[in-house]
Length: 389
Image 1 (cartoon, helix red, strand yellow):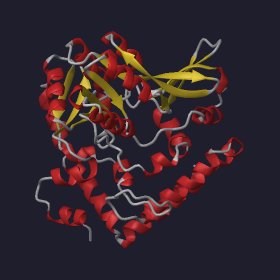
Image 2: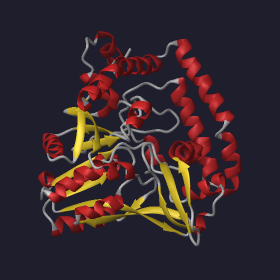
Image 3: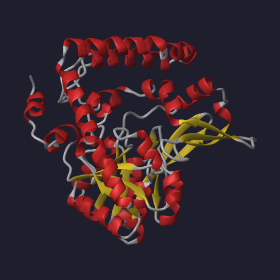
């Protein structure tokens, strides 16, 4: 039995040490949302990232914000890193980008030469790179990182697969927005020479195979889903009640990691940009967090994994490798669509049953975390009721 299992067995009411094993250092966890309903409606979850950066720019805490902006070219989708000086322009960058981004190192180095105080939004790998570069250039105290939880980054051509699944011509896409229109949101597509937009719900397109197979081995072996190098990490509140978050019009799970992050976040609250309640940190552990912390067995890696492999994690690897092979060949996308249905679901169900029937350590840890999250669910509802009363 690992030290993590022993920690679960001996824990007496405090989940803090358990949470740190999975998400890294943190000070406090909040459920938060932008006070401006337009920002919240246009965002991926609760608009906290946009509101926080807007506050920092308007109050002069940073000189510029570096964030990617979505581009579409001949059916391929990608992000281009951009320097933003005007806080009112930040709303144009709101929402998730499920595609590779380019020009990060060049833009960040340029910004460090021209400006002193910089804030960036970044998924874990970019956050780590930015922190490393800032430290090497003696810039550490002047870089503020808003980290984003990340499951993976789909390829530039993954949208072409969505065109096949949902029957639109990717080459005719003029603009695309992956998230927005209230949590959990919709993909919004405008085609060239078309008056109407196409809307596809987030769960429908992400779970079509788009979010499961169109990413590379770098994402596959990554163990940092939560952005441990950030000052503040933001995530969808998947571990909380769906109905509760919908009733708020969207909300964001906020993991404050540094004292500077806490000062900035509290400042944004006091200035009216953000509303928030402190919640139990156990909600910061998502199913993807657990999976990313589990040892891979089908690919050699020197990463230090937290959890031993299980039937479910090994089956997830097998499914990924087969699906990734099919995803890499456009002529096989029809077969990928079929595989991602019943065959994949049956395989994962069998693996899950084996884990729980045989009582693997992995299943014990997963179940324990789920039970802890359920045990605190009423507390969140009570806190929200008091907040609005």
